[in-house]
Each structure stands twice: as structure tokens, then as C-alpha cells.
Image (cartoon, rainbow, N blue to C red; front, side, top):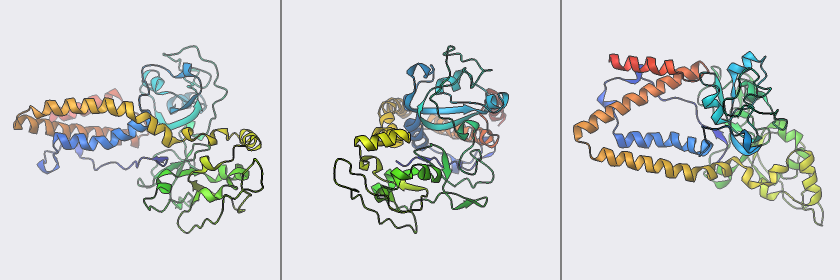
Length: 362
């Protein structure tokens, strides 16, 4: 699965989410089916990540979902770090929190020097996380255009890709605001397309002495041709290919990890470039997501089966009332999400109270 951020485009909203139009109503079974797509994204990223404790004691976790708090950044002269799910839920409620997807080898910063004015309620005794790699993402900015997500100047249907090296997100469009962005792969249904991993231009240049030797694993974008081979540069224990091409640029790679030479000299080079994780196929976002799904799916399936079992015992009139309520609830949630996204903030308790107050007036 490519590290693609879900399309932020929202479904058409209805005022208060509550128009009494029978044509828009859906059955309970349809509502559950529509909700499944959203749950799939949540399963892949959060899996069974706990929200009742801080992940700090786990150390620098190989990969975990991370967030940042813009409310605290504004209070701390725009100096902020990473937050685990537990701290988002317990220590930063009501704050403007940005989801960063997953990060590699990160440790929660809540309550340390990155968040000095917000004491961690779950793990108060924390030291500085010296091994965390901070980017513009902790300020809620993304891509080489340095904009928040979403942003009014970027069309809502423009997807984003995460670079596997710096883990920043980049817009997939030739130009946005006269600024160069990354190309999309040509959709062909192949495994190479589905499993390709993206490396941004800056990281390609910085890592060219490695990536430039494995251009044979590059997946071509529209108008691009790849003629490189994986033939070793010389005989012996090292089987790295020679450098091929002299124009480092952003691109997609398929089976790059498994193609890398792992002789002692090459491993030392990866270490010096801080790319040692690149030989670990379990480091990939696809591998992480695949590992997260099973336990969460089993839990979700059990809940869905219980719900459908209960619904099957309802009378037709009861099912219609339930379907109408589900339709209204879904519309209300969509409207709440839209308002929060437009204001670049979280949904607050007052937002929910106001929404339900509007519902009861209908």
C-alpha cells in the first residue's frame, strides 16, 4: 500500500445534516458499509494503539502514530515536538492538534522541554528526547510549499505522498501556486504501483550515492523511462551496482529494500547516511499497517455482528426510525468535521453540544 494520505475531500454536507429527504436516507446495513472505509484507514494507522497511556516508557518506538499541538506551539514560540495518541486524548484536549500519520523511531515529547507549559498527565517524569528527528511537520506544515494541511490554495482532491526518508508529506501535482510538486504514478493496477515507496527530491539528492545505484528499482512516472540495471559494479562480496544517471530527482521505488547490498562496507555507508533502516522491510508503512489490522479487525467485526444481530430483531418501523437517526448522525458528524477542518482545529465538546441542540429543534 502506497503511503498516500486519504483524500481530504468531504462528502456533500446538508444543513445541520438533517434534511428530511427520504431519497437521501440509507438503511442500517448501508450505513455500516459506508463506515467501513473510514474504519479501514483508522485500523491501518492506529490499529490497537492505546489511548489510555503514554507511549514514552516504550522508548523510541519503531513506528507509531504521532501528532503535534499547534496551540502549545503558539505558546512556546513555535517550538514543539511529537505527541502520542494517549497524550492527545488526555493532555491536549481542546487544543489544535495535527495528525502526522506515523513516524519512525520517535518518543513522545508531552511534558518535556518541547511542551514546557503543558505537564503530561500520564507520564510526568520525562527527559528530553534527543533522538527524535524534528521537521516542519511539528509546526503543522507540509511539503516543499510549507503549507498546513488542508489549505485553501490547494484543491481538495490533490493527494499527498509521504517520503520514506524524511517522512514529510508532498502534494501530488505538477504545480500548485507556481511551485513544483511531485508527479503521480500512472495507475496500472500492478503490484509495483501498489507497493511503490516514495523518496522526495531533497532526500534523493542527499542519498544519491545509494539511490543512484538502484535506479533499476525505480517505478517510472508518466513520460519517464528507466533503463538502469542491478548488475554489480565489481565481483566480490559487495554486489552494489554502479551509479546510474546524473540527475537526482524525486521518485518511486519498488523492491528497493530487498535489492540493497548488505555487505559490511555498504551497511557502514547506510549507517553514516542514517539509512540503516532502509534494509528492514518491516520498517515500511505498508508492513506497519498490515501488522496493525488483524486485532483491530477482529474487534470491529465482533461489534458489527452484534449490531446487525440486534437490528435484525427490529420491526420495519423501528428499522426506519433507526435508519433516519443514523443518517442524521452521519450528517451531523460530517458537518462537525468540516467546521473543525476549516478552522484547523479539533472538534470541541461545545461544538457537539451546539450540533445536538440544533438537531432537537428540527
